[in-house]
Length: 196
Image: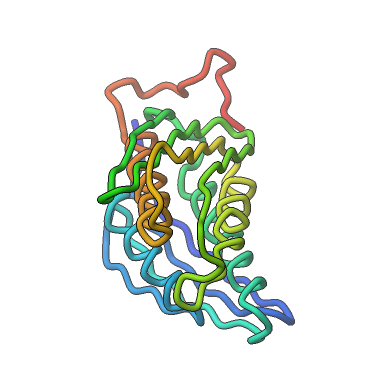
């Protein structure tokens, strides 16, 4: 039997960032405030479309946002890993192509316990608001590495960088929503008997 709640609280403080993050895999309020407004917008979309509750406060050293985006990714990944527990009863896999006007991004995830990122989304601009587009793949790398899961985000169509970025976060969200879903089978979804 799955024992709720599937939640995690992560506090991370370094010389570069201060982060407080609460994640509830099964829903709840969402309030995201970082130093990067475009990242806030993307994480709001992630929470909404994954069905997660997400409370996040993050401040950085004001350098170039690299540190805060990396560390928010680390904290979110750690929270996902912790909240999933032993992963008993979850679907484990999720895959969905998300359209946003001209953009189409495929998100596929395996909550396998093994980290891997395949990010093949190409942005035609260097910045989206206050977010450097080169940091988007770095964010997803930090999330997948610390969450210990395989994540593929593959651009299938599109040229508008805002749409491609937002479709990427929503594809991650929807594939994660499917993978974390509770099934009727309460065993660990692996022939090894372990997802770690």
